[in-house]
Image (cartoon, rainbow, N blue to C red):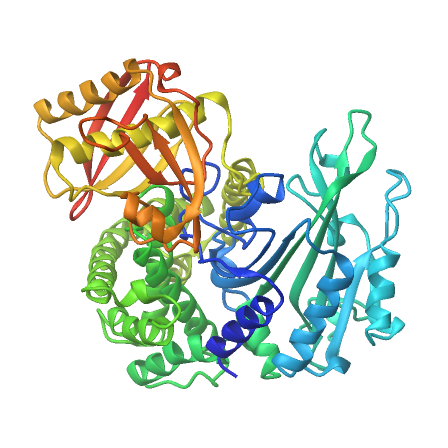
Length: 605
């Protein structure tokens, strides 16, 4: 079974049960400074899970592009990837446990033909200290559906509880959360005692593969730290498309599914090596995963750089280059893998085959490979200088890796050839410290994916709408938003424009935005059919796909002379109620981001 088949059957299955199919959000969250990438299906929908009304209704389904970059170095086993698709269905107060679990089992066993005898489930065992009850209801439903008691396991809040803050004791007052029920596929392989005496669904020996998780958001934390049932109980299901496809094929290796196998086969052709040779499998998997992720990142407007999203893309591509060398692939061959990814995904993600898009992706990947090879030459000089001491410290090796992109494996190989030592233990310690800092930063950034809704951030969010329209008024109608990043201290706005703005143009844009602020324009929104929004002239975020019904924010009342409001954009909000509260708008910097894309950084004073 192909990934396309699983995705299509899933969306159709839930559409028949009253769900509206919504499009995948961009890999780069819109107007969300809290996280670099969309890392789960529920991330773009959190405002609605927390109470806002969704314009498409209370039953939703989608396949969301996701990227998790926290553990790039660990990619290489048979199931972990950085890029993946998350199939998701949501009930915003419409249905709850019985419908969710019965539909999920029906989809798995009847739509993608997974044998019921292969399925195990887990439920929340409760927390006596916090007076949170054991989820006997979910367990009873599973039992009624034919999952025997011996394949229903209970775990504590570390495994079977969901909230944005993690375990229930860490939840702040007013935070919603609830138990979840995970479902696992049993490949029936022999348990490896290295992972413990007994096997269970959460064992890492390879026998079990988690293929889905139904979150039941039913509690809210009170001022006295007790928990109260929510008046609106929501369902949030997420299941990895790649893992579901692997389970449907009874193959524990996700790299054998069609969307990754197409890249593996091209690597075999270029390297003249076989994927089945276990000596080379890690390199095949790293290249296939990182290349696919890079294609989607560039397709969503990310370009290699030394900061933010661009830095993650750069790391992926440089690791892919290193493993391409391990396999003996010709130089500048990563770009030859792009077309396979584009071809296998073009039905679900047509933006990858837009005019010259695949050529642009190939060009970016080829350029990054060329730059990295030059870096490797520079890193070699640094290595040779360090090697003069007849020993390389772990800190120096880490400096080579982190600053110059020089792979640690290469340091070890060169040192071995010269008969000098490398303090590997010290290097690993430095790496752990670095990863610890990164993870803490990620935890701080990703509070469940919800954008910062502070008063200042809301002001900056509104100001981007004024800036967008002002740029179109001054520079021309070719200007469209290409991305933004907002904090409580400034806004960053990327837009399509081929040349540097003059000082006069920047002043004209500033003056126009400030004039609209002084005009005290009202800000409001309306949920309307997408076709009507198009007729009204609403503008949206570059190539983002929208659903049948959209939320459109307008700034200003109807202008008598033009017959239009000043700004009309697709957006999820939130915004101020009137531009008079924004203060004074000031452009601090205007610069190039990539070919045809400029960036403005601005503040409200």
